[in-house]
Image (tube, rainbow, N blue to C red; front, side):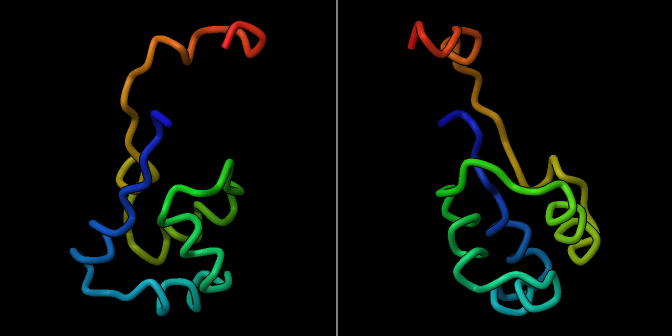
Length: 78
């Protein structure tokens, strides 16, 4: 998938654990683990906003994009 979650790097820079972040954001450790591993298909903007508020960052600091020409294809073409 061309979208990569870079949350671990931010956690390291902030000296924070994923467990602490999950508690402050109000999500389960399982949900946090799935997000960190890029194993989710989406995230609510409200949850993303809470992550950014706690980490004092912008959404682009938690996600990265690797361009892929297939992203512009219709689903039935893939």
